[in-house]
Image (cartoon, rainbow, N blue to C red; front, top):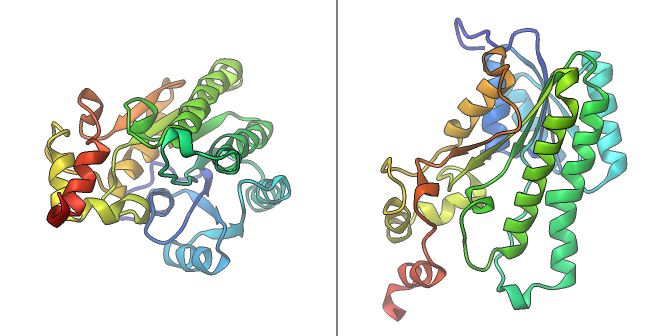
Length: 266
């Protein structure tokens, strides 16, 4: 715990979708630093153990597409904590494919990871938040602004964001808040960092970001910490864009990105 940082002291949190260096890891670390008791979850037990040891958290293997795994995760949290105050879904699956080439198998996998699984995770959270709580979905700016060849990804992100609004509406009387965080590209995260750390591609993104830099995982963790705490107690049903203002503009085109990645062929 960082000296003097106890804003989440006494709170319990599940962070699902954790792997070393990703956004889920940054959120879990920030929660632990701010005094929360944290249970991290994801598909790779060895990676989870590494993260948990580093931040002083508990860990539980969980594939978000498995109902049995989700049941076991929530049961573990109940056994450890007695109740759940905060639940974060930071899972995701990237698929780059033209609309007409996206297969049914692609769609089913995308829906399982980014819609059905989160939906069922949130169902279990609301059932185990008798004293209210905060549910946080890690979304994407692509749920709001276009990005070619990402129709399945964008559609499922937008769909689960609307489910978050439904939860906020239906469970507000029980003190349960639900919000989405929509990052732009995150330079130090495994899923998006590779391209953003290549100077020609980074420069294309910087043209579309009014604040003049690409995001880092800590930017997302800062907002997730605020949403987990009492200072955001009157905020629910919202999507908070953490993108340096990118939604005021656009994503670079696929043609521009390909040209930047292969300048000798442009």
